[in-house]
Image (tube, rainbow, N blue to C red; front, side, top):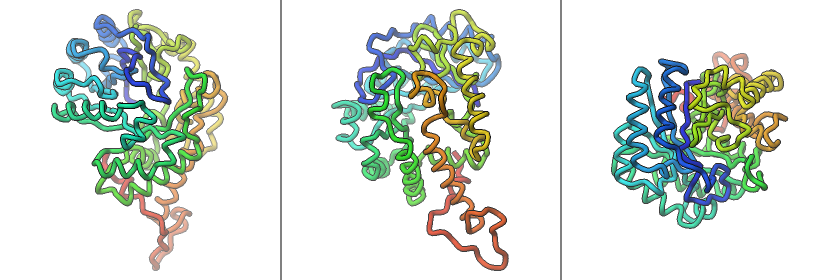
Length: 383
């Protein structure tokens, strides 16, 4: 997996999304001095390697325009011996022309969040969310920023999947979906969480809808799931061993295995001010836990046909239902198997006219075609 550093300027957020697990109203803000230490640390840590920095939160725009003017210049100039890319995940509420121009200077793609039509979105994400996000979206577009939206499906909104898909289709928006997760921070960790079996059926539904509308919409999750199978390895962090390749840096410089753990002391691996080595990070209590999960997957998933491009799913997802303990793989395993099996079955049908693979191919006669949509168009698509 490529080297990825997530920068979390704050865990604060002006929104009050019903299912959020990453917001902390008392969170401090990252200083420019911490960014300087990030640069100093990375001059020694995995030197010369390409790196992607993603600004995440909480709400990263709370850090303000001046923070980004200084921080982006420091990272770009201080690490100019590497290939550097940037990205940001924001609800766009605080987007201004000034900030947008700074981000555009560095060609920063923006990820934002929208759960569908206004009424549905605001029920899940708080009253007024939709209008504020769309105002920011217009400012971002007017200043040349590329914005794509993540749609979180919950136990509530999955019942309205047709309405949500049609919204993204009619508004010419790329669809990337995210299942609502249990939280290690919440007293009701599963209240909004999407049931794994429902998630699997949702993915199959979106596969069908995507194939019917490929000239009108992109469904990023389906693209990546198909590429997982086509290439034989995971193409996004959920389906790879991210340990040692992805780190998140919190507002005070603490280093975590992923942004989902930021702010939780038990998952601190080190601090950028100490310039830790890889051995330091992976030898920490949190680092050892991540490596234990990898070994757990190697043992418990060894007979699964999908292990090479699934890797047991996300470690955070796996630990969240068990108070941070390793007692199983990602509970969305059921969903992953459902969609992977569906894709492979359709691929075999596309190529050989049946689900038995090459041995089922006939010669001299055209193969029987399934009534299901073909899938090779996605397999061969460039993403």
